[in-house]
Amino acid sequence: MKIALVDSGIGLLAAAAAVRRMRPDADLLLSADPDGMPWGPRTAADVARRAMECAVAAAERQPDALIVACNTASVHALPALRAAFEPALPVVGTVPAIKPAAARGGSVAIWATPATTGSAYQRGLIAEFGNGAQVTGVPCPGLADAVQNADSAAVAAAVAAAAARTPFDVHTVVLGCTHYELVSDLIAAALPGITLLGSADAVAAQALRRIGAEPAAAPPGSRPGGLEVILSGRPSPTLPPAALSYPEGAALTAIPGHNDAMARS
Image 1 (spheres, rainbow, N blue to C red):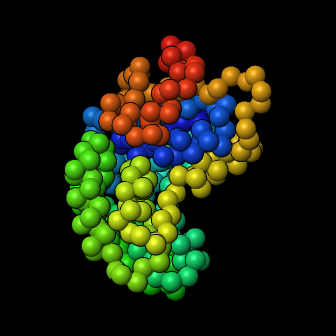
Image 2 (cartoon, rainbow, N blue to C red):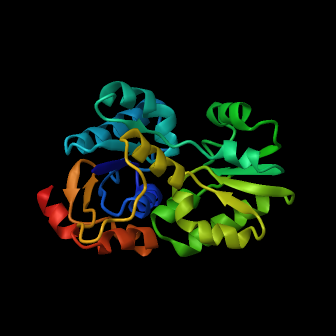
């Protein structure tokens, strides 16, 4: 079983780590686009084109499912990706966890990139899944870039600024960018008592459901899942250095069988 993930950068690590927790025996194929990132400021057509290029590079390696582990790409590229690859290759997009956040009751904030905050896409999600809850969009300028570059000082400054913009009566914060889940501990520390909801676990579970697989511990004696990395269409022997500064990235590259999987690519 092989699960591919597509994103502009290392935001895909959160969903990859979730797949690894649910199915330690699954092979992972990570296809990112360092040459074209960030995708957020690009036009919709350009995002769709670059996401398609990453997906094609992944599909050539015959995965069983493809996760679009990026909110921006899910908005602009998901219909085209599904038209190109389904039903042979199930494609799973990433949607902010607004519905479960609203179901918890109380007011909700969505932390997202400035381009997403206030967009027609986010307004539509709130209208469809907000269930009448008070939902506030909180723009987080610079946070995704800081996470991508593993710039701890810039991450801390961006998190503090976003926390200051979050209404005091908020009960739940939705992490509306996959990069943010890599620093959820820092966000939680800046928002004491507030519940954080990301998308990684739900996306991973949906990908497994689409291929008829269930979360399960690896059977005794089974081989651990391998890892392949593609950066802007080029096979890479490892993840970008910044990815290794996060537990999710370090754990993926530390698994036995990593080098063998890379050699096969």
